[in-house]
Image 1 (tube, rainbow, N blue to C red):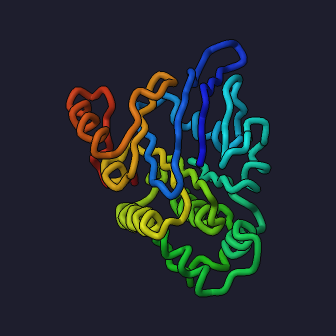
Image 2 (cartoon, rainbow, N blue to C red):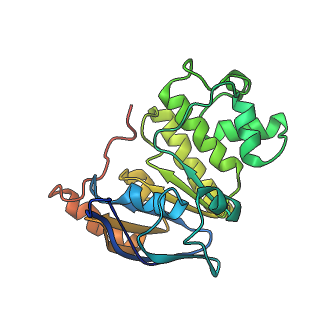
Length: 242
């Protein structure tokens, strides 16, 4: 589905952040990217989404080289990205955003289902504006719902647990499980939460800008749990950040 071939990226002054990363991400997989803070996880996600362009290497989506495409062009090819810190869209309602994401008008039942998947009561949110009256956690959940509305080939979620309450986090984990079971495209989730890691098909460990390990959950997770004891690659024991 998506191949990363020797991807590298660095800062203008020459500091290398991503170094020779190669990955093969399959269809209809739940892939969790984890590792220590500052290791390059978010940068790697931005390179896949087209927010940043690699300094070397190639990205191949379904056999097509998409390396030179920007974020908008990659979105048209079926890659969706949920920002860790979502932008507030002044003047737009939640309904507007979800319909823009889906590419057309949505029935009330569909809107309710999308918002319910991220732990929001639809009746309270459908016609609310995306402005300062919404908390950061609410905006984050609406952003995740907008990614779900796109029905993308590859949906990228950057620390979806950040800033949401425990109940909403539990609902989000259930949603990821449901989407995986339904074969709703590939989900690439950046997270250190053990509960999210436990439902993955595959886990990728990124540290110091390199892939340190990658493979089926049953092979990778026991090693991560062991390393947690030495605090080299800490996992989130809390259910979510509040």
